[in-house]
Image (tube, rainbow, N blue to C red):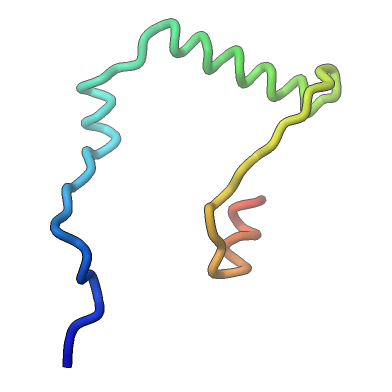
Length: 73
């Protein structure tokens, strides 16, 4: 019997942990300013004072209905 799992995978590379990545590549002040601005933009859209449309995209696929609903909440 032949294996059918992972037959096209040559190898894997572990991802850098978020904490380590933040230490190695700290965000600039300009980055923090942009995040603050964008959060304010979203707030205004949700409050109706900014008439732009906002689209929130969740998981790329949902295999479990309850998990999808939990994510949405």
